[in-house]
Amino acid sequence: MSLSHTVLSSGRSIELTELRMSSTYEGMLEGYPCKRINDLKVNGLQRQAERAFPSTPVHLVPPFREYPDQTAGAFGPVEVLPSVACVGVFRSTAVAAELDPVLHRSTLTVVWFQPVPDIPLGEDADLALRSIPWEELAQDYEL
Image (cartoon, rainbow, N blue to C red; front, top):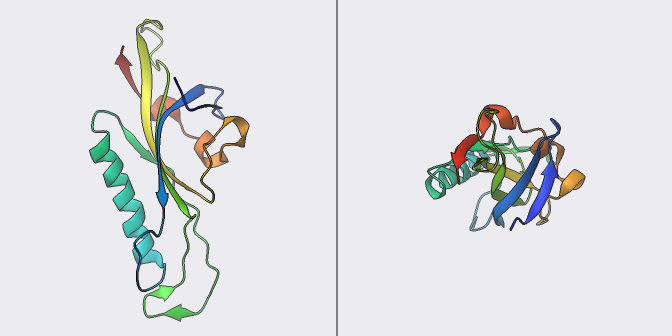
């Protein structure tokens, strides 16, 4: 059973089968969000996804970065990522046309950030998420 269905910009339908969400800045006790901290957060989430799902390829959707305050502190200007960090496992029909559609599927683990803790659904899913080049990134597998 899938959690949601989304149609990519390419027209391919994908299903979300697992979703992990967390607060982007959970555990940040001091300092402020800046480029260095955010790069660590983004890279750390991608590595975490790679360890959690070692048998599937992992794709990072580059997050939108906001600069609400132009005054620079000790670590540079304030830079804010969307408040929810997500790791989702998606599946679809096989990428390779020669594979049996009954016996094969394709899968991709995706890392992205979004402003609210909603499940990406249909056309309401973020455009960056719907723009994933599935055929280039996903991996086919046998059921």
